[in-house]
Length: 401
Image (cartoon, rainbow, N blue to C red; front, side, top):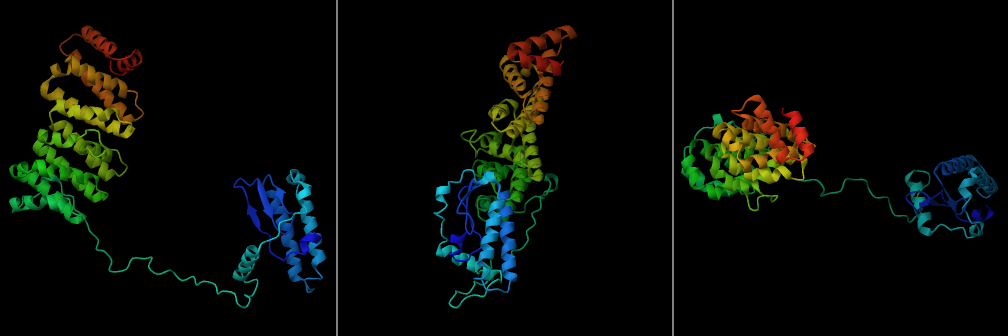
């Protein structure tokens, strides 16, 4: 303590060597302490603060109160639990670190900021707390834009359809997102009321319209998905090569984009994407549609798998309704769809499990058609045991009796 009185007066400064708090250096106290926690430091600082308060309230000169500081410091050091100093090497006690000029200046600046000390002559003035210039945007406020999403049955025909088709590609791929939304709206009007005019330009305009789905603006995403619904409803199988993309499972493939939008959390976008997938499953030829969707049923994302399973289920229902049960019982078709359903029946997503169960019900209905109860049960059990593992077959037979 006597040696510490020779150093300049500074408040306690803690220099943390380790984020875990294992080794802490403190000035105006013992040179270094090994600390197992912060509670001993708190007790020391409380004792030191009480001694400093008494000094500030004293009318004596600082030189007269120096012994009192030394005594208070010794008392604070003794208050620290013994286990905090058990790793302290007493040979280092004489090598007490001396505060640097930078640390002394920082402590004096802190006292000036807190109003405990007047600034000395020659000190730099404190920087103004004024808000820096150039941080906020300037100019007129942007106008609020409301994008209207009109249902398909309320879309009016266009007056100059030929002229609109010529400018559609440039507007959709332009940087003005409002103009792009307007172009998507016009594409929907063409698909509903002017199919022949749009069909001639479909190979060129189709990829541009489908790529609008990945735009960052939610309003444009919804407009693009509504456009996909109207295009598939109007052209059906002509849209399948455009939806497939090249390669089919690439992140920018149109079907991948639609599945990702259907699995996201923004409901007004996800609902429109799910409606687009339902339209694809209900309007397009089943086998080519299922060929496009099958790779996504094994995607690493559980939500994408679930949306792909829902679309496959819609396509399977369309196949059963349009072509009859005979197409579902073909060996290749039955094997592919039954194996997929057996895999998805244990999926983590409830939506995927529900779709798999519905697919199993449709397959069972096709297998059992035209047979009595015993023959139907034997045929369905035989198909499950042939195509599935014992565990998957038992689960499918339990859920679809």
